[in-house]
Amino acid sequence: MPISITNPSTLHDPVGFGYSHVARVGSGELMLIAGQYASDREGHVVSADFAEQVDQALANLGAALESADLRYRDVAGLRTFVVDHDPGKLAVIAAAVRRIWGDQPPTQTLLGVAALALPDMRFEVDAIAVCS
Image 1 (tube, rainbow, N blue to C red):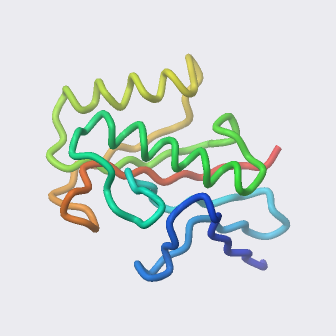
Image 2: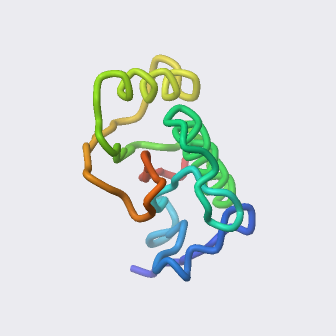
């Protein structure tokens, strides 16, 4: 099965970090979106605030999806990673997911972790999307 890798120009260049943003698998029905975090166009974390990190990471996820002609509604599953997870952070994530997906959110697995790739990262999300 062929795999097509892309890195949208609307996001930072991830190759120096050792990954790519979007992979189209096979004939294109399945899309894998790499972990998105609260990065600016240079790959720097934009805020120390957890809620702002969640919002920016999900906006970056939207940009990655859009680069593949997909929308949030095409997401079948999310995997979220949270540094020092607690119920307050879960409430922030749940509110952001409700704003985007309403009452039909995709599947989601939340993993509490000790750290992420960069010292200032507190939240990261990756996705599996399906072309309709």
